[in-house]
Amino acid sequence: MTEQERNDLQLTITHALKEMEQEAGDRFDIQKINLADLGRRTGISRKRLRNIQKNGFVVKPHALRGTRKEKTVLSGFTGIIDAQLKKGVTNSTSIKELLDEAGYTGGQTQVKEYISSHLNLVPAKRQIVAPQGGRGRRYTSEPGESFQMDWGFVNVEKDTGVTYRAACFAMICHHCGERYIEFFPNAKQENLFIGMLHTFQRMGIPRHVLTDNMKSVTTGRDTDGKPVWNKEYENFMVTVGFETRLCKPRHPFTKGAVERLVQFVKNNFMAGRTFGNITDLNFEAIRWCDSQNRRYHKGVCCIPHEEHMNRCLGAEARLVMTDELHLYLWPERKISFDGFVNFEGRRFGVPYWYTGKTCRLSRQEYTLIICSSDLRRKLVEHDVTWSRRDSFCKDQYAAEQPEEYPTAPVTTIMRQNALRKPQAAFSGFNFDKEVAW
Image (cartoon, rainbow, N blue to C red; front, side, top):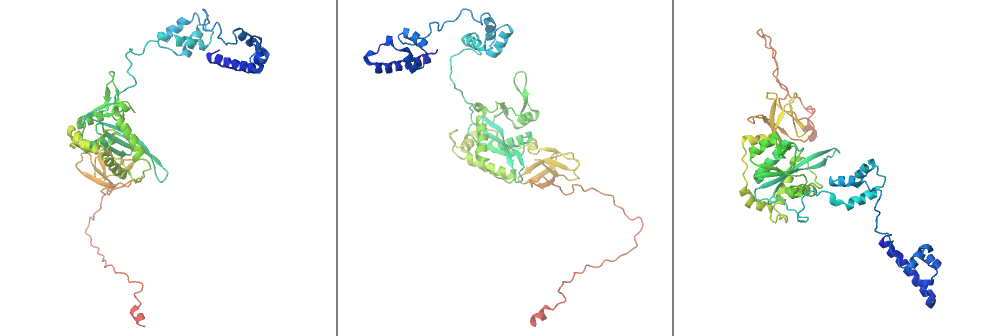
């Protein structure tokens, strides 16, 4: 019986005795009380009331409470439990399975109680130091030191009921909160490079970029734990002139600024938005970024655009578009056997007279420009209609065909008269005469 059960039982008996004392008056004698009547009032058997009466109707704990037998069903098996606890194993189910194999016939409750009372045998996971509390320090940076980048994804529903997924590239200055977002049909590596270059053109080049373990950035880690960079991304870093630091995904203490930016874009910019195509959507995204960058933000305690222009840009390198960097803005495509190139899920035609097997292309607002692989010659321009139909171009299938010429002098002559204009259907009527009549 627990202490709470004893207190409840004592309260029940005391209340019944008071009622009997009020009814009997001066004739009430606790030593000569009617146990049958008391049992009816309390619901307790007379045998139990008789034992309680010996203590003056005071409910006391059992005399053997708190004592344990010197020898239990677990005796002789404690060595197995101690060995597992010293190895750091505290799971009672796995320990009981070992005990059952050794001949243990008891239950799991005794095993749990023994484990809880011998946790001092479990080795410490780390060195015991003075408690520091639940306190952490967020990652901070100086002006122009670091940017954070990440991808966000959204499902787009078309009027026809078809749903496809679009990707949003997001980058933010860690010091001042200056932000930039751009939408792409997918999150391929070439779109990552385009988004980063567009950001560097607007915001400058930081000393390093914080990101998570993207496949476009890293292929894994070596035996020393150092990141193994994707070769194309490593060449991009060297060409532009910045470093990259990898962070845990969805980790607020290191790259929480861009994580919050992606969430804010989804809840603020994307919510309920309707657009015509990705070009229109990116125009709206730039206006939204400019509006947000010119507002006061409590998190950074400044207006991001003013702080970035005054302090961050002075500490950052400016992007100079070289011929090598232009290649990242003009991704390369293979020309198919029927004279098409794939771009953003659509096919665009290439003239037949271009004999190269690859070309480079770029979408400039509403126009797709296709150039030679060395960017020295423009091949064709297409209006980006955002239709899934193939876009053909002039001379896509034209080819030089053999032509026959006369082998003998031509002496036959024909004549061709000039074409006469057909007379109108009412030319035979004199309308002036009719009016005069």
